[in-house]
Each structure stands twice: as C-alpha cells, then as structure tokens.
Length: 601
Image (tube, rainbow, N blue to C red):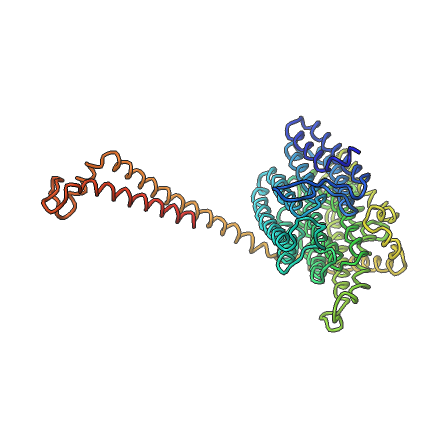
C-alpha cells in the first residue's frame, strides 16, 4: 500500500516548497490538498505501520503509526487544511503559508516519530519553522519572534539533553526500549523542556507574547501545533503519569483563565486560554489512568477545533476593523452575523456547554480527577487544600474562569454598546472553514461516540464513561451559571484590574536589555581583539620584511647600543637577528593569547 511507505510529513513539506515558489493560488491549493490528504491518510493507515531507518548512525523509527499518532495526524491534517483555506482568504502571501506548511509538516514528523532522536529532530525544526512564520509579518513580530525562538531554543536544548541521558540509561532511542523516560535526571530535564512548549507556569510567557503579534492567519496555525505536540511528547515521556504533572495542569487551568480575564487585547486573551485548556490535557496525562489519558487526547482533538475556530473568528474581526482592543469595538453581532455565530460555537465549545465537544473531553478529565486521584495520591488524607479533591477543584475553578472569559470577550466585541463601525462580514473563504469547524464542534458534542472512535482506547471510554448523565449536565450548567453571574458581578472591578502584570513585564525588558548588553560586550570584545591582532600581524609583517631596519631602529632606544644603530663593543654582531626573531615570537604569542581569550569570552 503506497500510503504506508510515505510518511505524512513528506507531502506537506513538499507543499511548503511549492507554496514558496509557485503563484499564490497554486501554492495555497497544493497546501490545502496536501493537508487534507494527510487527514484522510492518517485515518486509513493501519496500526503498526512503521519505517525503521538510521539517523546520524543510530537505530531510529522515522514513522510509526499507533492510536495516539494516528489521532494526532488526523486532527493536524484536518485543521491544517482549514487554516490554509482561511489564510488564502485573509490575504496571506505564499511565503507565509510556506512557512506555515513547514510548521505543519515538522509537527507531523514529531508526532509520527517512533523514537526520541527523530522526535527531537523534528521538534527543533518545528521551532525554526514556527519562528519564521512569526518573523515573516515584520514589525513587532520580529522582536516577539526572537523571544519565542530563544524560549524554544532553551526548551529544545533541555529536551535534547534528556534524550541523550535517556540513551545513556537504556542504550537506545526507541520508545519501545523503556516505559517512558527513565533515570534520575532525564525525567526532570524532559518535564521542564517539554514544559516550555506546553506553557508550564513560569515558562509560559512566550505564548501570550507571541501569538497576538503576527498575521491573523499565522495565529491560527500557531495556536494548534506547538502546545499540542508538547502534550503528545509529555505522554510519551510519562505514559504512566506523574502526580506533580497533574497538579501543574490544574494550576495552569486556573492561572490561564485568571490572566485571560485581565486582558483587553483579543488575541492575548485567547492565548492565555491556550495555557488554561492545555492544563486540562496536562492534568489528564499526569493522572495517568487509561481513561484520563484518553480524555487528555480527546481534549487535544477538541481544543484544536474550537481554539482554531476562535482565532479565526476574532481574526476576522481584526481583519475587518483593524482593531485588537476589545474596548474599542462593540455591537458587531448585527453587522457581522456569520462571524458572531462562529464565535458563539467556539465559545460554547471551549467553555464546555453541554451539547458541544468541549463538554465531552473536559468532562472525562474532570471526572477522573475526582474519582481516580484518591487511588493515585499516597497519603491523600494528609494533603493540603482539599486532599485528593485538590486537582478536581482546580479544574472546576478553571472551568468557571473559562465561562467568564468568553462571556467577557463576546460581550465587549459583539454586544457592548452600539456598533460605531459598519465592517463587512467574513469572506466566503473565511466563513467556510469557520462554519465547518464550528459544525464539527457541535456534531462531536451531540454524537460523542464519533469522537471516541478516533481516540486511543475507545473500548475503555465506552465501558467506563457516560457523557450525558444527570450529574455531568448539572455540573456543566452550574459552571455556566457561575461564570455568567461572576462576570457581570465582577465586570467593573475586572475592567480596572487590567494593569495587573504577568511576569513577562519583568522578563521581557530584562531579556531585551540583558541580551543587548551581552551582544555589545561580545561584539566589542571581538572588535578589540580584531584590532589588536591586526596591529600585531601588521607589525610582524613589517619586521619580517625588513628585520635589519627594525633592529637598528630598536637599537637606538636600547642601552649599550650606539645611536646610529651599530652594535657597541659589548654587544654581539648577531644582535639584529636576535631582535627580529625575539620580536616575531613575542608578537605571535601575543596574538595567540588574545585569540584564546576571545574564544573563552
């Protein structure tokens, strides 16, 4: 079968090359076909398909299909096709979409990898291609893209170090060589390195800093691939879960939603909610039960759909109005009804309204946090802040914050005050992917069994979890009511609290000025070394070309030497030769010393 011999990243990367050199329409058309084809092929590929090869002389598996990689391939291809169509109608040029397709292709390479070396190879390429995607827009995206690149360079280096340590422990890069990452050091390095990509608290600042800055179509791609590939890698590293990863996920759910409530920039608000929603996925991976892991991957699938939809909807608002601040627009539901309906579908899905896909997957993770943590937490009765229910409470609070955030965003953009501008609604090429993705959010919520069919461990989900029970519905409705009341009670205080900073208010200036100081120090040091070496070399060449003249000129300044440069009676006749040879050696040693000092600096 031909599909089994061609890794899914290959056609997408070829499409990226074509998009970079072909006319804009041709490039986008090829990109759409390639990504849509990957979605279909991923669905059809049989489990166990693999391509074993050598990478850098090591045994690797370039391409391996199992339930987890297949699901990632389906959703990566599906949303990639929708994003390419949206990009074309949003006036993205061919080079931008080429970078985006390169980003999609390298992400596919990472999730289909069958070993750590291949995964980290594509992981680093994913950072490069996504940085190019950000930089392409220019303006402030250049500076945020630089910070993005530095963050992922550091995170990728930690992941690479963990992979090397893993090889030292087990003697192989293959996933099959051990159950996750083993040893005393590799798990810590891996957790922190992947934590950069998924937005662990304290390692998250690149995300709300970067995603609001590039072209609106670029933000749609960015909101999908980096963080979800990170969650996938976290599962590969910790397939049996880890308690503190679960709690970090819960903390992310609360932190992201809380910070989103303080934002007035539309895409920055959406970016903080990526942190919050990824927290549910990380919590599911951390809990580690079969059902929790399935819920985490279900939430990956669903989140990609509704988060891309939200970025597309808000992107249309920005595209048509040129405004990114929620306080500067309002009343747009009357003049942009298609965009409003699309936003409403995405907001209901991310908030977990019963009947939408977010309710299905988020419900699985929350249920496992409630029912399984007691068996996971050792000595749970002695734990602080609620014992085994702590994680459940964190996820519940995050759910209330999610409702509040998207009530806030929808209220200010679509309802608050009369429409002071009269923009056109979405282009047909924007509306089509938005409504299609919104329809999927609704369909997968009403027919959760369809979602379960593409998730890992389908049988376990069907046997152990029922989506629409009375308690689950009451929980979802209660969160919605609490969020609605909470927003309108706190609307005024929240509008006055937008000054509350995140740590990036300190990190970004420190990074900028510290980086500039470092660059200046290095460049000025090298410049000084360069001047010194040039001077030394010039003098050495002069001595070499006329040693007799240099010896006499020097002799005039030395005691015991006659003024006209001739040797005195107590000096040997070979004085001029000694001077030239000694000076040359001294100059060479000086040059080598300066060069070594520069290298050490």
